[in-house]
Image 1: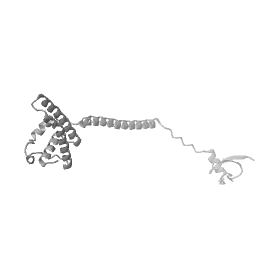
Image 2: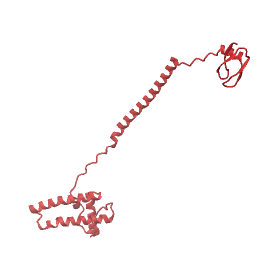
Image 3: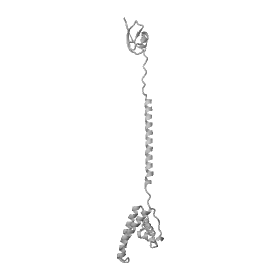
Image 4: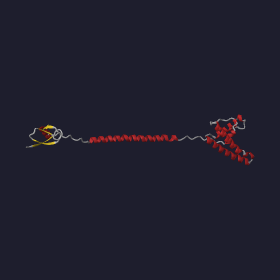
Length: 206
């Protein structure tokens, strides 16, 4: 008895069957098929589909896409760097504060002299400094005590003498320094201190 080798058309399992049989059942999947049809299918197998190969055109296309992407990224980065440089150049000088004009300094003695405090207290002209009245009164008291402690001793020495002139000059420098300290403490000018002193004289502050 001759044996024929066929392939199950459903699961492609090879089977050995007698050549005289017209049909058989696949022991693997249980499917029944015609031996003659399976034999003809096995003798004429379908050609396998050729695997897709990557051509040079595809490689060139992918390379071109990657180059284009890198060019775009490089262009954006370059524009960002240029913009940052321009921003630094144009904003670098804008942070500098303009120079304040120099105001000629006047001694406290000159400022007080201009107020003409020898007038009657109610007639003394003054400018009211933008500070609370309680703060202005404190500045007036501090200033008055400093003047009394500094120039009170000078009355014992004649002003016309050399010693009197030297003492007055020294005391004037001390007063100027103390007035500057008072002005810096309260955020005002030395002339504001003199104006507060004039206000205290006019209002009779104690």
